[in-house]
Image (cartoon, rainbow, N blue to C red; front, side, top):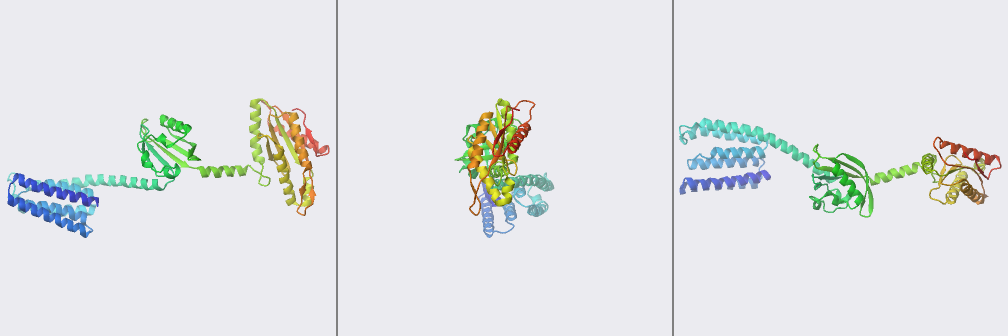
Length: 451
């Protein structure tokens, strides 16, 4: 469609040009009338051909354009502009025709040129000029135009195809792509910002500073720093969108090696992935039966609490808890009832620990561990006794309604971590104290000597 309109426009323009030229230079009403009739006839034929929607219309239109000029020149006995127009037609043909159509067009018109050069032109041009020079010039130029313009058009088509593919990709990709110039003005903004950043009209932001896309000061400061450094950046970033906080995987880099060049930013919404990751990590650190932290979580927590107490030079207390005669309880009432007892114990332990910094975990079958940050020996003993009494007073119903009770033994250790002392020592001492509690009758708290 674009080719048809372009060539049709040129056809009309050249016909008008030919008529005006004939009037100015020949000043012959008869010649002017002949040229006008021929041009009008050719335009009419082309319009009829356009309505028929012929398959080879891009070839037919330039051919009629050339034929109209040849006919007009024959009618008025003038060939001044034949080759000039032909060169323009060749350029249009290379730009808009397929290779096959272009070669066919050149072959036909060169054949006509050859006939003109042999039979007609010698009687219409000065003897000092060679008709073969005109023919050779037209033939050579047609070949050069074909090679040069075909290469240019092919490269242009490749670029257009690449941009079309890029545009199609940007319409469906969930990633936000932002291209900015050297003054941080937006040059391109992908349509995904409508959904990801709740921006209804992305085109309204083109030409504006890309910081206007964000509302939080800390986010703007980070992007300002990226823009100043003009270097590669990749990290996770939390951005408030509406009333929701989203997590983005942010990539940024300059678009060329020039330090002052523009930049591109790509934001991938990974909120759901991070949520699932955090959920999976949370599940991996939780005991599925009792819904309290497990041994893996305890191993991470004790390192953190030990280093914190070492840095702050404060007491760290540790309680090792073991359910008394748990194996007998399991053998008597069954494993399902044993699981119910463990769930009850976990609830009591969580309820008895009042501070948010207190940490409880199940580290074995019926063994539990409690970390008490900034808690001295007396305070730890009070907490341990409170836990023990709460358990002692609790009743656990069996499946047939029978009331059962259970007790626990607790070993308590308190120390101030110092350089050269490993956190494993507090676990070993608490285990020894818990063993002493069992050896001395169970259902009791045993406080270890100072380490």
